Amino acid sequence: FYGDRNFAYLTGIDQHSSILVIKKTGKGAEEILYMTSKDARWERWNGTLLSPDEASSLSGVQDVRPVSAFDAELDTAFTRGGATELWLDFDKLTREEPDNGAYKLSHIIHARFPYVRQQNLLPLLKHLLAIKAPCEIAAMPQAEVLTGKAISALPKIAPPGLYEYNPQAPF
Image (cartoon, rainbow, N blue to C red; front, side, top):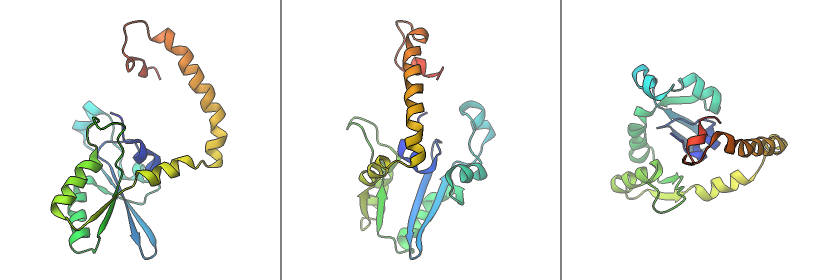
């Protein structure tokens, strides 16, 4: 599983079926993080899920709710909450790439709430990604060295006949 890179950039979290909602309020913004609830049976086969406290600590978002509550809360926002606009991350590298959660949600919203104006968040996210904090700039030389070491190690761990995704495990 590879999570959504823009979601990971905004939250620091790489976990499936997670949703970040940022609501504009009169006082600024309110953040809500919807996460898959822990499930021992699922985790046995697929890996550990974050607890609400872990998700809050990683992301800085104080309000963490189960993803199962998202649909009802979204309905409330558009039926009784006065919301008329929705910004979604329509990030695709190619047209052939399968629709991500934003595209799927967009179709649902359009069918159920045709009056809701949908906007593409991707251009704003790309602008944010271009802005580097001093700590990111300071980390770039080390990232360059580590990338060089990884590329140099590839011939040793990837003999002929492997697919390009096979060497990812050692890294």
